[in-house]
Amino acid sequence: MWGGVLNSGPVFTTMRINQNGPLFLDAHISRLRESYRTVFNKTLDTNPNRVKHLIDRLEQPPETPFLARIEVHRDGRIVVLPRRMTTAPSSIRLSTQPLPSRYGNGPRIKQGSWTDYSNARRAAVSKGADAALLIHRDLIVDGDTFTPLFSLETGELAIPDSNMGAVKSVTLNETLNLISRKISVVQKPIKISQMNQIKDALAFGTGVGIRRIKSIDSHQINYQIDSPLEDLFCEIEDSGILEGHLLDI
Image 1 (cartoon, rainbow, N blue to C red):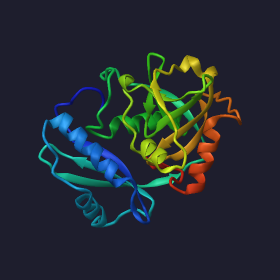
Image 2 (image 1 turned 30 degrees about the vertical axis):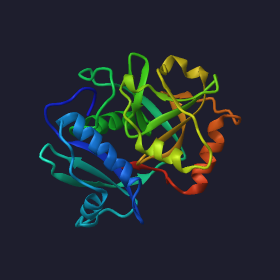
Image 3 (image 1 turned 180 degrees about the horizontal axis):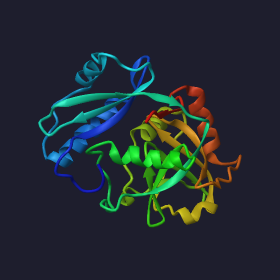
């Protein structure tokens, strides 16, 4: 799941299933193919119709919207695991959780079990937060089930550097592709100690939808109305692309 290549465990992606079917299905399949090739050095022989068929055949799926974790094992076997979601507040509070020590720097592959994500979320919830922000040596790595997007005082819109361990975000990339304006987002190291340089912050995720980040470790994000994320937030909300939910752990 994290950094390098693990010796066992499937690669996976988690997609949202709305009333009209899977959201961003083609992009999730592309990420699965890329991860499968990276981890197992083989080409994945599948297509969106095959995955959609497996989702449609779930015996007792949760009420929509729900999440479906799509696992691809080394032998090419595909497993669909549904997960419920609960409604999230419009602004979420984050608690920082350390990246597990066995994972180093470098882009992460979503591989293995759900354990690290669920443990990070449980730890955040126990501290009174809505979700976990993963950090490593003062650097923001990623969210537990979302990608943080920051508006910096420099005028840049930034997400954590992939070399710090950030996962390629299907939800963020595909959502930005659907809106009417061209948005330029850079990837760069972002430190927790630089929070006073953050004008605004949003969380993008399959489960969380799009949510304003209200605070990190009880330190308030000093939201400014002139932030370029304000218009982006309103446009995506008005489009109805992403409703706000959280994974029900």
